[in-house]
Figure 1 (cartoon, rainbow, N blue to C red):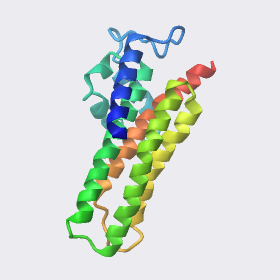
Figure 2 (cartoon, rainbow, N blue to C red):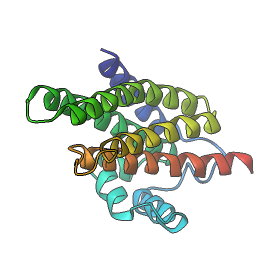
Figure 3 (cartoon, rainbow, N blue to C red):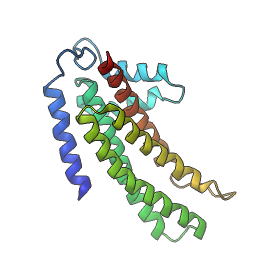
Figure 4 (tube, rainbow, N blue to C red):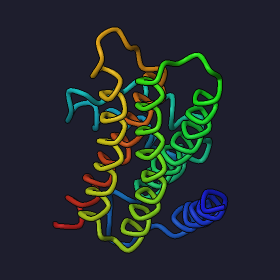
Length: 195
């Protein structure tokens, strides 16, 4: 139930940011007719980080048509919304894997740890969006970083036993990359707010 209400809320806020650019903030009010903000933002983030994937950023954000005409605030919301969707889907995948009967007790225990981490990420993403919307960018950055760390912790849990392969590698990597997108954009806005 939290997921549905948050998705609706996030969508409303996304449209709010699309309709009302922040005055005086040139980064958040770029003219979408002259600059593809998605491409520009992904390129800037990739230039600033060795781990950031330009291709993943472009392919993720471009699936959302409004990403081409939004501002940085909207792109950050889209990134967090995609992370929330990923976490929600991963919880379903974990629950399925726990019941399919093909994993040993170690892998099941690791999946349980991941389930708890991912359930916590849902609340953390909601908290990050709330902080972001109130322009508490440093709090939002901490929350998004915690979600990013949860994906890494989940993946590492499977490597504690030799020969065990994580069944969640793709999901964990996707969550890491999606949070990296949101984190980069929030950081850009944070720097702009300090000027």
